[in-house]
Length: 229
Ligand code: HEC
Image (tube, rainbow, N blue to C red; front, top):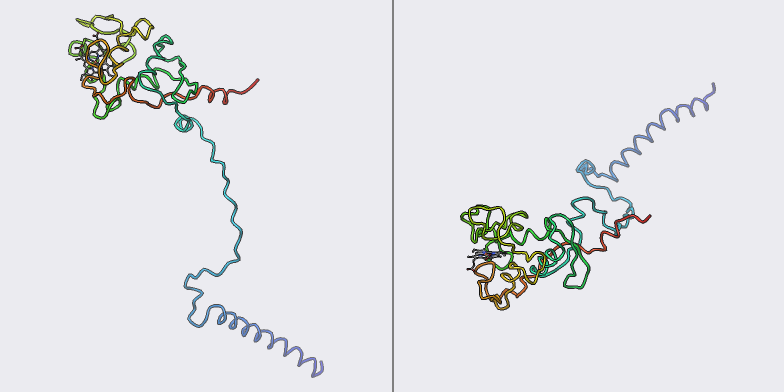
């Protein structure tokens, strides 16, 4: 081996590692500085990555969540009860009604009508529920009438001695003749039969047909979900 060959080998063996060390130090000082800022959890400036554009469609809702999100119809309380009675007052079968916006809607006793009898503060602010006075304890209940259940409403009033069948309050399906209608329809807080308007203590400010409430759902909402053959 001659001298120049030795020189080249020496340069490569010593020079390269030296260059490497210098390079690493340079990197360290230029990027982090002598204060060792790299270890201080600094977020390095990153190349901005375009964010995905948010999808505008809301995630489809299912089950109970969908039912809760479904649009409700609006109707005066008395008209809802009237539609139910006129349709034959089934406990579970849906009945149709036209809401305040002229939408064709359906509701059921269980989901929509029963609440009008058992919910306080519904007919007016501070109103007791019908069932506060007309409850299942027939002996103590006003007019011996139980409005707390479907069976109780159908059994009617004046069930003296707890008899199973009293006086029909649903007019046998003729809403205009129904005692329930006559006790609840109260322009300026007064019934047209000279008896106290229900709920008892009802102020004149309550509309004749009671408050407008949310009930049922548009009839065509179900049609949309029904798969076409
Ligand atoms: C604070 C107690 C009270 C509440 C609440 C109440 N009622 Fe009455 N209800 C009475 C009293 C008292 C009578 C008897 C009224 C009379 O003297 O004519 C009566 C009578 C009735 C009658 C007539 C029964 C008959 O055969 O003569 C019906 C129907 C009726 N209530 C329905 C309702 C409905 C529906 C509600 C709820 C929207 C309601 N009541 C809320 C006390 C109450």
